[in-house]
Image (cartoon, rainbow, N blue to C red; front, side, top):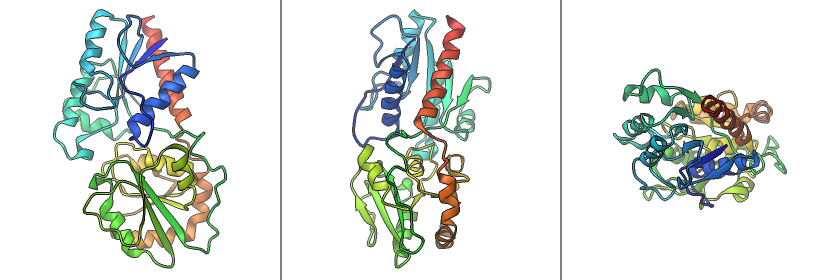
Length: 316
């Protein structure tokens, strides 16, 4: 089987889409699948849209979805899978959902990275009978794991951390600034990544964006992960924190409950301090639960490979 991913393969602290593309390339190759990121040959069995856009406007994109569709018209047995990992609700735009629906019209199958995304696209015209599957994102457990992790001793300051590649204010900076004002003898907070220019953090430790082993090493220095990202489609940040053994504080927005439920505490801006104190009290309970956090990249890769094999078998 030969698969084309419409993504560049860039290393470094990029967003979740690039992490996904790099992992899937390596996972598929290790599974004896040939992987390319172009449409130059005429023997491609499956095209996986990591970046389903009409033009190659992003650095991460290798080719637009119309190129893939034109390829399929000449090679009708080729299967196009669209991966939906964005939405207007997250970006504050008014075109992304319609764009994703349009891309789906030129695809055979749709994969949503969280179940809450499908109803958003249905409202913008996605056909009810469009074939789809939900495959949750996963983090690379060879990098993000609890090896050499020292867990909280129950008496020192509880070390809280989050990380975001994007500096979009919707990543939760209103909550993080609120947390910044609560820090004292019981809690400390570290933010890894880029912050908006108008963010004023007085008590928070700010660390530039990190990736891979360096990021995992820094995450493991902390005790609890927090995410206040609004309308999160299914980001990688909370997954990476969880796999490093950090119970999660999360808001009820987007896919966060789907990814974090049962592995920490839900909170809102009105009860943040209350939930911080509850996390201190129940840390041992949630630490035990987080050790079985299931969303690994290996599990995700296996689900994509199984889907590809099923779709491939129908046309070959």
